[in-house]
Image: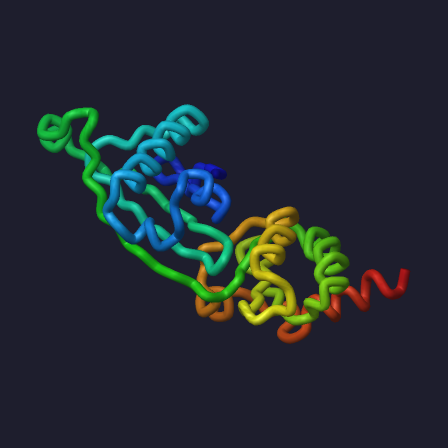
Length: 197
């Protein structure tokens, strides 16, 4: 489980499929209202409190994004609570508004183009030559479809070593970002940076 504070009242939690498996859950279980899911959420909030100082009391908004074969990204937002509402809720009570979304694209974000150059060396040797590179908000995004010549779990493991899964949609990236390389991005980067050396 990886946690990141996005701002003073919002955090992002990334759960890999291994994190879920370790807790005896599948991605499908997260769409159900079960005791295991409630326990997972309590564990996430305890860890967020310990690591980030994020306290979730009263109404919160929870957005769950299922990233194809990569795991889940959960965005938790502490809603603004008035004094009247605080009186109505005990410290143990959390009211959640949950939004669910699922993406079948594999989208990873990278802090530098150098990370993608290094990644291309590994993926090219795995016969993964496709991809699109988009620059958006000072980050680089690699978009792959899920039809790759390697096991998707292995692909995600390699990608996670160099970048982070993104919750941004392909449509948003294409509309607001700048397409750096449209087709066969990994092949082009590998040929330019690795074959010449």
